[in-house]
Length: 427
Image (tube, rainbow, N blue to C red; front, side, top):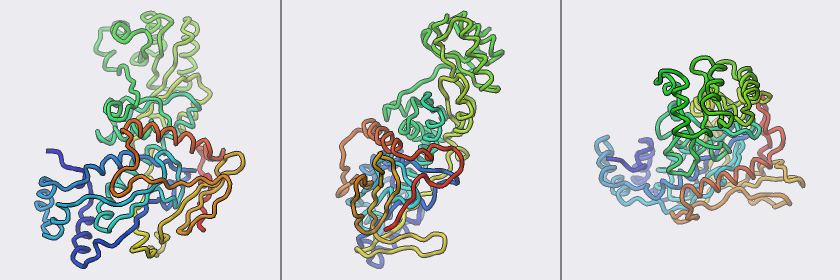
């Protein structure tokens, strides 16, 4: 039996609630904020992703009989706690950066205002969703930038958890990937899907030509043929013999991709297949994609480096209490200080529309020409502000990301290590 997302949490969220119920502090009005103290080493900006997925879970954030039984089995038997959870419904307000926006150290990307007993239960789910999806989106955005307008396909499903694969495909498309291999992402979010065959299909047949004929007969001459199961150049010749010069694309998945792409393009042209594209795969990351910028490559397939921690370092977001009954509160421990008070945030731009600074303050920010308010209402009284379906919400996030990213200064696009593209200023 499937359990609701309320159990996708840490035990200490519930033990804190039990203690707060016991001493009468559970209903204090509180504001929690989500922010990253720093960007991953050398990154120039981050991309906020996952907000839409998070909002979708709120409607089902309830403790039913099955969830309460699971808590009792794990020793959470406090009667006051279970009684509170049995009637739980989130009734608070949520504000945040629009999904797809870029963020910097200290950016208050999400703000949750609710009684402590409600807001504290959201912490683990909020962080697990935003940290995962923002890490994927931030890495994918660098790959899109390195690709220089050539399409990228997300194909990392076999390298991660099955549900993480769906979220990764969503986050990658949000920042500009053209498609995904993951069918669930297509069904849930309308992400375009793509895929043809693997080496196993070629090995299934008695020879390469038979495999290519079967694929072309089924998918048409516009398909992509994987030509490096045996000898790559011979594979290209066979592909054109079978499909003709109107073959859609060939895929290279091994060897020195830059050198092979040059050879493949020359051979295709000599065979009259001038419009047949060259797509490359094989453990690509943003650096490998950038290294292929001068090669005659028409598209990239990205998997392992995008969906695993090596290519997508954690966003490092935290969920901190910043206000209690209208009074600012802050953590003062060295190295993990926080700033008390519910924040306002604006992004400043010059006359050309280029972002110059991010102003974050617990006080009202004096408006200037070119300022853009970053915090938008997402939930009011427990209800979503928009009524978009998941696919429409993702399309809106993709459009917003394109606008936000276009406004970044030129140094944001650099893959070399450096400081954040714009400074976060407190006032």
